[in-house]
Structure formats: C-alpha cells, structure tokens
Length: 475
Image 1 (cartoon, rainbow, N blue to C red):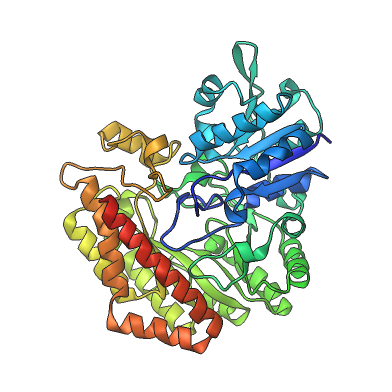
Image 2: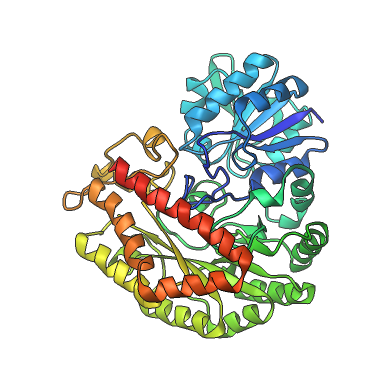
C-alpha cells in the first residue's frame, strides 16, 4: 500500500466539515459530525492516516509536515469549501511535489471537468461511491486501470468508466477502529445529542426524492442498501466496549426508518447491548414501530419536517403528509421519544404567508429542539437545476453558499420573496419558537435535571445568541 493521508482540510473556524447531505456549513451552535466517509477509506487502506481538520482544530501549518510522510493525498471536499481545499492541496504539494492528489465528494463528482481543468494540483477525481476506487489507487494500480476515476493524461481528461454501486455493504470494514486510532470522541458534538456521541452508517442510499438532498442525487442513489443487522450490532458492541465515554450512538443513514423490518430487527439487537441510540427519520413512522424502537434504547429522532405547508412539501417531493406528520409527532411525544426538528425557509413555493404558516406549525407540533436552514442549492441536485432554469440564483454558488465565516448564506430569490426576506425569516423562526414561556421552562427544566446538560446548554445558549447577533450584523 502507498502511504496515504486522508484529509478533511481545515477551513472556516467552527465549520462542520463532516456535515451530511443538506448542510455543510457553520451552525448556530458549534457542531461536528464524524468524517465517516474518510474513515471508511482509511479502514480499507492499512497504515494510512486520517486527519479531521475542522473538528481537531488543526491549522494548515500543523498539517504541512504530513506531506513529506505520504505518497498519496485524498481530500474530502464540499461545494462551500472547495476553493479553500484546493489551496490546502497546493500547499501540501509545494511541500512534497511528488504527492499524488485525489479529491472525493459530491462537488467534484458533479464538477469533475471544471475541477481537473481548473487546478493542475489535482491528479484525479473519484466518481460516485469511491471506496474501492480509492483502495485500488492506494494499492499502486495505474490510474488508467482503476474503474471510477476521472484523471488527467497529458492535455486530456479521461474517465475509466463507472464503478458499480456496492450492494454487499458488509464488504466494507468497520469505521469504529479508525475512529479509535485517529479521532477523539470529545471533539464531536451538536446541540441535541448526548455528549460525547458517535455517528456512523448502517447503509447508503435513500428511497425519498427530496429535491434539495445532495448525496442520493450524486453519490449513493435511491436504492437503500444496508449492512446486515449482525454486522452493525457487532460494530456497536466494539464501540461500546472501546469508547466507554460515548453516551449515544447516532445512525447517520439518510433515513434509517425507510426500511421498517431492518430498523426493528436492528433495534432489538441494540436493546440487548444496552446502548442509547438515535437516527434520522421521516415523519411517517408507524406507532408500532416507534414502540419497538423506544423499548430498545431509542432516545431521539432527527426529523426533516422542512415546511408546514403541504404544497411546498409536494414541490420538494418530500413524500409526507402534514396530517401523518402531526400524528407521528404526537406518537413520539406520547412514547417519550425526543425530536430534533429540521425546517427550511425559502424552498420553491415559499411566500410571506407560508413562512408564518411553518412557524405556527413548528410551535404546534413542538419538537424539543429545532434547526432552521436556508435552501442548500448544491450542484447536482434537482433544486440547483430548477433554480438555474428559473433564474432564482442571485449569486455564484461555489463562493456564495456560505459567508467568510462559513455561515450559510441566502442564495435563492423569487419575484415575490427576496433572498434578504428569506435570510431574515430564519432568525424570526428561531425567536418565535424558542422565546416562548413554555419552551423556555422546558429547556430550563432539562438543565436542572443534569449538571452536564446545564453546562452544555449554557455554552450553546451563548453560541446561539452570538449566531443571531452575527446574522443581524450581516443583514
């Protein structure tokens, strides 16, 4: 194997470089997700090195000495950080001109030609699911013989052909031992998980067709493929025994609850292990399934409600009815399942009235916590193409999705609703949801029940107000 460095580059201070399919940005509360895709690659390449720049607080100067120690550099990039990541790669190749550089991630899958013609530093770009593609490169295989690559051959860019998606998900090694070797669990946290937590995948792909969601449209597809329950349970047992500090396991599949039979079988095995766990869910899980999950250690569901207007949900192809979502939420409340609700301001069909409608809906269903985002118009998504076709984009996406601090910017604008109004709606939403007597009493009660929760929520409260102040300054 070639000596390989897998790198999530340092970028904006506090930027969540490992964020999932919709939100690669700096959040209102400091948050970091595990770099699971890179860890998966490192697990396939013995004696490789994994560095998570954002969560580890690394500077470029701290990473530069690694260039001389390695033969291959693999960078996980995203649309908001791409320009920065190229500069990081250039700095590393200046330190070691023999370094072979490859980029992976949804942005370069979509923009491969622009990437390879725009930067002589990048030697190849990985297409779609890139696990075994990268493994073969690190084995020393000539680029022309590795399926799933775009690479430069003289003045020409060549494609070695598409690599089939992975159907046997158990063929991928565990990421938890890589976490143990290279990462510190205490560096990963967000506003709704117990701290410290650990996130990983049980499968890839998503049956849903949400127009804004990045990974199913660019990398993993809409065929939800899962690891076997025994394989997942064995890794969680390893993680439980080797990370005694971890209080909660989060399954970061786009929608773990899409496969009811699988999630119920998995829950029963997790129940035997005695772990606390959480996952992403659609707001349509049957009560009987929720009962099984809750009885076997489920604590929290991260739910993409997005809007309180049915027409907007239909526009984004969410595949959820508001009446079902209301019943699902009530079932969760009844069973004691905590909900972190996700909403988006400014999707197609949004008006001043639907903004107020969604805020009222959120207050009505009352998830424990919320996050409110702007539409992430990533290249490769239906939403991006729709925005370009209709002239809704008011800024160049690569540099415009986030500001100079890494905070998400408003890039969509409609004839009846400006991007400034959409931007301001996020702050209004947060204030109207959280600054209610009942909600403030609930959050205060949570703090007094647990000293660790109190310390964390006081820190997060400070960050939240700083976030709102920063938005007001930028407006």
